[in-house]
Amino acid sequence: MERYYVEKCPRCGGRVIEKEVTEVLYGGVNTAILRVKAGVCLLCGERLYAPEIVRKFEDIEMKLEQQKTAEFKPLGRSYQVVF
Ligand SMILES: [Zn+2]
Image (cartoon, rainbow, N blue to C red):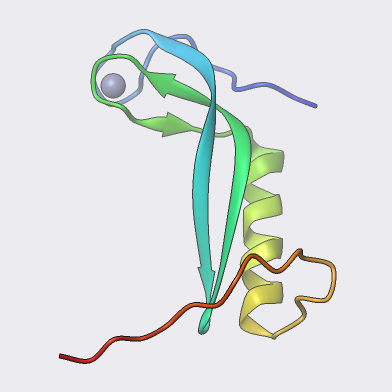
């Protein structure tokens, strides 16, 4: 898999290191949580993803939106709480 591709943060110029991060994706009423490798800026925390990862995110968000979630592992239920 392709790695993040810059060593300097485009936002602040800080050093970028590779890290495994938890990303939450939303589509419609559905949510997906995934662990992915990202470039993370040590100064401002900006996350940088390889273009193929971004495409994967878009694909997952579209599937969430269209309720095509059969391939995803259920984690539990989400609740809306009204005060
Ligand atoms: Zn930065």
